[in-house]
Image (cartoon, rainbow over all chains, first blue to last red; front, side, top):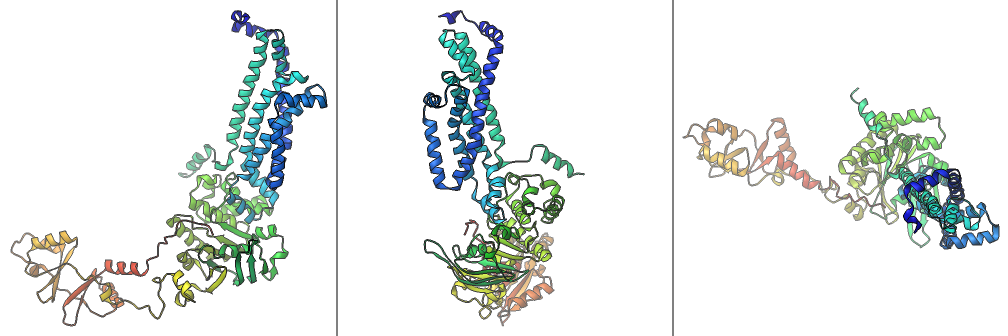
Length: 233
Length: 385
């Protein structure tokens, strides 16, 4: 009912009055997501590689990461909290576990989908298994890995808004403060930046993902014209 | 020199893929392994770079048993070209071509120099193509790069697994010609797998014919064509290709000649003659009398030249036929006469000088096409083996 009286101007003025605090929440939000994802990337990619080495490892690892991801986010954070206590660390560990599945799975799928002819020629010309992985399979799996990261990022930005429930910071604080004090302005001030962040992350990582699709790589626009320019000379 | 000694390959499922293979690949030669799919030709080739290991027997390169060598090192010293090319899509052409020297840790400048030289050699200007990516090249161009990649580290041995069979016929011919040209310069030991007999005959110094994991016959292409070991080889060569010496004869003019050429009686008018040539789509008529004695010939030009004079018949404008061959002469004789007198056709007559038929260039070509029916190979499905 109060919302009838609220205008966009009120929202802007609220933000400008509290910009210091909101900025801090915003940065906390990003930081938690970044660290959680970063850890998941550091652990998930090698796990994905391990999966591609052995069918058994793939079964076991993907089974575990799958289970981790189907656990509801709130339940996961609460369980972690019981074990690790309140605080930002708990949130980041939660995000890490949550993001592991898309990254591991996509790394695995990315490595598996590399065309057999590249593997055959790589092996045939004398690449060791490690060189084949680093020089051929991994570059050609990059777009899949990026897509995993993108899925993980969008999920993480959403999940991290419940961080305050286990003592974490971030934009969720503003949302919960708003809910508790029945103040829509504060809810919006937390929810809108979080939503924008998720959309921006999705778009930016989507662009990156397309850029990293090296399987149909072309020389950049300048190269063919430069080559043409040389011909008449 | 590469030697295979009593090589057997038995897979876990019990399939006996290679049965006691004994082969010798001579230095500086192109040896072609050929046979129907599943005959073990690729399997045999892959023994040499240890992509495949024998269940029993030995593979020796210059006297050294390769099972004692590090397979990765071994492969870097053996060029490898495959049917699907397998250029890495994320590396540009120069990078792709120089991948083996890079694995061998050559000096950067040396790699660049070598790659540029080889790209130019196969007709891909390095300034234009070096910075492009595989997806921007045609199939034929990609396989040229594939060949450059195999040559870049200067290996003595090159293995080629149906390298040209996925290409269109024109690119295939070009690359075959280029391979022959390169080989004259480079003198590598090349082992080439194909299922295309024409390709084998064209490029091979030695052909090894395989079937069901066994070597059926080994020899120079000419030897195999002249003396096929058994019916399988004869079938594989194609019965009509170059027939066995004993049965192959130069055909007689009677087999080659057109038996129903366009003839006219001497009394025909010029307008009629033109009408006949028009409807039969020929540019000359042979003039024969009622006893089929050859009187002469008229060409369309001569008729048109005199067309204005209405009373004239073909007998008035025809020119005498100076050359003819007797029935029963060989085609070689006929061709020699046509060649030395610059004739476009040559009549065939019997012993009473009666007109029987006409040898034309077209009929000679048609006959040859029947003798060599498989010059354009029908197999273009590029199935792997």
